[in-house]
Image (cartoon, rainbow, N blue to C red):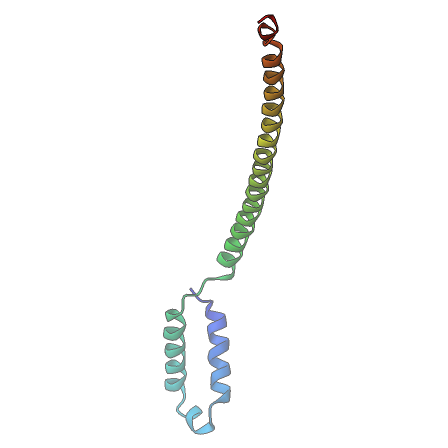
Length: 112
């Protein structure tokens, strides 16, 4: 809900800019200004400062958490990219060893 003091202040400012002829209507116009002002402000989807500050803090914590998660994801992706390179190197070493073993096992051809 809106602060009644702020509403009163806005209503007074509106009254101050009205022509003198309208001001002469007195309390009736004052009540109508407040009523219209209150109803129009209630139609707006407004929050008070405390709720706004709370939501701002929630948003900041969420952004920090998102940044940490993105950083962790990047680290994991980098680890996955490095792992296949190491596996490829190991496979190449194994293939070289297998080739050597094949060459070593062929002495039967020399006897024939």
